[in-house]
Image (cartoon, rainbow, N blue to C red; front, side, top):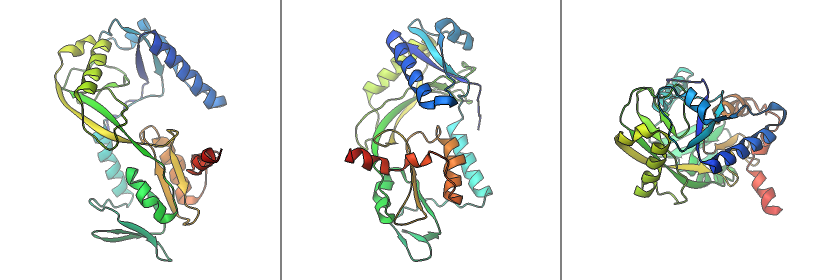
Length: 287
């Protein structure tokens, strides 16, 4: 998977970004409590020392470094996940849009154009399909779309010894530039305005990228909840029906693998995990 886990760096342009990042780290530490939040602000010179193979731009005033950060090649990760599913006895069915879900008294039955699929438990991981399917098994899934855009460059020599947020180099040499947060419904297209903004920031951060060719751009749709946190919930009316949804599945991978999977398989819930129920939004609405 080209897994690299030697820490990660977020570079900051200007004092305003630096102040905001300090505030974000302080808030995370407050929320983490005794567990702590291992992330530090670093100065411009220290950031440059972490990236000895490339010169950072003059607008970079510093950054933040987290020793636990890392990254993987997303395509290799996807292939590895499919391989692991099969190795564990799982089956992956493509082109199986679920039209309805019901319980026949013995198991949940998902009806698809290619026939039914039944199981004693069912987990809705359907992203933006979950609000349509959830009510069939008593689950409310309040989510909304948000578009993000990314730029991909030609292959370059290795520039970064550690991952850099929003300007990442894959093991194959291509650079993944930028991000965006656009409220445009389900439009997953790209725009010149956002492409220009991402490219300009990348060049301000690393001037060497000024002469690099872009190979492609793409837009994709995030899955966001009202408070931006994940939803993990079990239906009260249909026990055994679950939903797990939110943006940033890679960031949540450890929770999904260690806590959510154990909870679904055995019923054993990590203390505090109940806070991720979608019922928290009903409380906010009532208040």
